[in-house]
Amino acid sequence: MPEIPTSSQSVASVVIACGGTGGHFFPGLAVAQELRQRGCRVTLMVSPKDVDQLAISSISGMGIVTLPAVGLNRGGWLSFLSGFYKSYRVARQLFAQQRPDVVLAMGSFVSAPPVAAGRWCGAKTFIHESNSVPGRANRWLARLVDGAFVYFSTAQGRLRAKWMEVSGMPVRPQFLRPLTAAHARTALGLNPSAPVVLVMGGSQGASKVNALALAAVPALRQAAPDVQFMHLTGARDLETVRAGYLAHRVPALVRAFCDEMDVALAGADAAVSRAGASSLAELAARRVPSVLIPYPTASDNHQHFNALAFVQSGAARMLQQETATPGILAHEIVRLLDTSKRAAMQQALAAWHAPGASAQIAERILHWNTGQAQASPVSAAKQGSVLNG
Image (cartoon, rainbow, N blue to C red; front, top):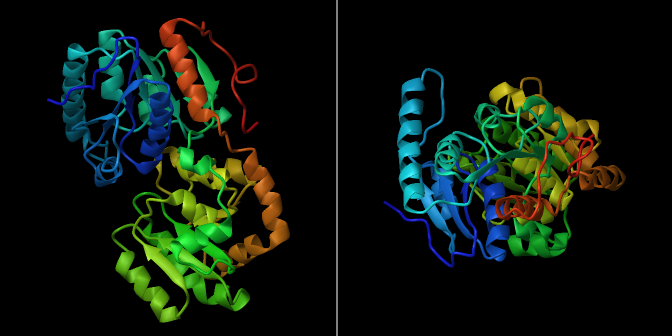
């Protein structure tokens, strides 16, 4: 049984449940890094999924616990409940050995067992909701926790929490460091003076986005002959997409994943992306205009509503997967490569970037824990940094 790292009794102990997807893991890691800078003991609780295990491989200075949790797929109630019970037992046994002061859950199926175990042992409990439409786990947990943080202000009306705050979306510290496009492209092995279109389908890739973007390459090259590509395919489509760019004879950096998304986005003039909240926050941090293609079967269609909020503010364009064609996608990307249109979108993207989100969340949960700040129920108009109306 793994142990939560121990240190001085004066240092707060925080558990962050943040596994399931990169969109849940990386914001949790950003808060964890902020807490570590404040001298806290931090333990991350993640899932057995490959995306989590790959992400934790390079982390040091924090405890890592893999919970046997599984997502709720269609017809998979038995596996889900079994995973929940086993994960709860692991968390409860750990917390019995050393009670954390705070449990913060970032959403997804990994969230509920640590929060339930945290309540059992008397820890303060919080959730962060990244999407405009809260997921099932957070809708259920909101009634139980001490407080909730949200990225989209519209999510507040869909959560029944005692206390809520619009914190924005935590992004990793490297996204806050300045980096010129030319330096980023050089680091990636691309031409520093030619425009770059970045295609990404989230932490696990997106086959439909991959195929659509690849089919749009000839029209894009005709409209913008010097354009080059960086395409993050996910493991399944790597070789197919790589072969496609070779067949088109265009400069392209094709990878399954990228460990330096801050560099990739810094080098991009435009992006084609799904509309997961973490991806949107990173696009905003680097001010990259994008064509968003929401995942059409995402729970509660939340990616559509995430994208819609960006589109309505002028920060992105959106296409529906079912109706998008290579020609339409190429046309939208060419528009984004127009300097004047890109500048207007970058200004809108700035309003979605909350560089202090990690610090705000860390400050609140630590002050709540030590009693230095008294929290009370608030409305969207009175509390937090309202990023989106």
